[in-house]
Length: 102
Image (cartoon, rainbow, N blue to C red; front, side, top):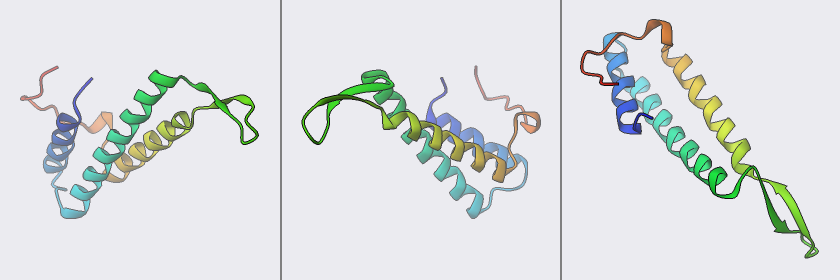
């Protein structure tokens, strides 16, 4: 998986290639990076605790609850997709970067 720093660099490069590297769009890239970091934290929590986890209810009885990180990860991913759409960046219009290594 690509590092967040490489993703940020790639997004800014694509904006530059499209002549759209203005402050507003750079700010959206920063937001995208923040959502990436949050999503990674949610994924880490899901791996550690699972989709469901055991806890105690307010009355002290053991219960199984859905991990809120599942919902949050989806929310962060949805927001990332909205940002890409607002930036006009889609897979079909990505300019190949010769410095990008797979």
